[in-house]
Length: 215
Image (cartoon, rainbow, N blue to C red; front, top):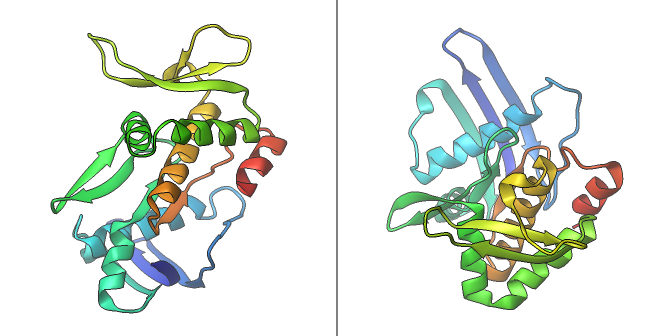
């Protein structure tokens, strides 16, 4: 399943119209532009259409769209929509999945646990290797389960004897670890997915952002 062509129009309640002229996509696409030119809005529009086509939401009263997916059969559009993931910039990045006809949202901790349960220790090793390739010196990634708190991902970095909880990592570290966990899980699951990532390099220095882009 692959998104090949996308056209979009919406009208907000204030009367403002916004339109995306037909775009043709490849396997990997980088949207570049000045601030306030609509990069985030474009990703949100694609995610909004995916939610509409999948049946997750019904909001067509203010929008029109055209899209082509490959393969071009009607069921492929629905499959594409269900497997589209939108990872926003300003909010927690959760994974979206359909189970028993309902939409569920999976946190980083839940996704990491699913990966280690399904693929064993090699899953943690691959996520950690990729995290280090970006520029972090992680020697261990694990999940802590306290009796009085929810499970949480923790990272032990080089030169430290204890692990640091996700919330105490920098925003750039949190986003990078989350993105690499999701990508690794998708690859290991052999799941064709449209992955929309808003500003994946935010907070990273140039070299680290370039390494992440390469990954």
